[in-house]
Amino acid sequence: MNAITTQFTIRPAQWSDAPPLRDLMEKTFVDTYASYNTPTNMQLYISTRFGLTQVQLELRNENVHYLIVEKQSALIGFAKLVQNHSAEGLENKKALEIERIYLDKAYHGQQLGAQLMQSCLEWAKKSAAEVVWLGVWEHNPKAIRFYEKMGFERFGAHSFTLGTEVQNDFLMKKEI
Figure (spheres, helix red, strand yellow):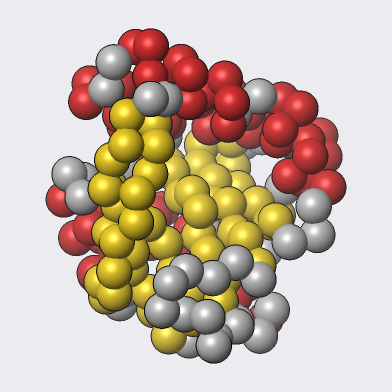
């Protein structure tokens, strides 16, 4: 995709990235949400969403694309993009969902998240999307501020089930 600096690169994920991508998915999810959820619900969610077989299936799915942030061959961030997946209120638009976007917490504050988001938006434009959308947990003000800074605006909400707990996500979109 594009180099950020000589240290960091953003590129499309490859089949060989599946094991370290799976590990990074679990690590960043646990780092972000473990203190807010029960260990049982965290483990249930992780076991159903972040298994190696699941990641491999997604890497083969033509509607799912992963972008990864790499530092010297180590994966430190990723975004999962889902084409042709709309949300209520966007049914008449060619929509692309950013289903996940995470950066290892050791690299927060270095503008890598903004670079990764920009790469997602560029990829969406190339795929002829009209709107990019995402869901963000209502109790994650840091992420909400980041998305607003990147030009996203709230347009609705939906339920998100983590383990056995139903939570509320705000839906945010950006026309492109």
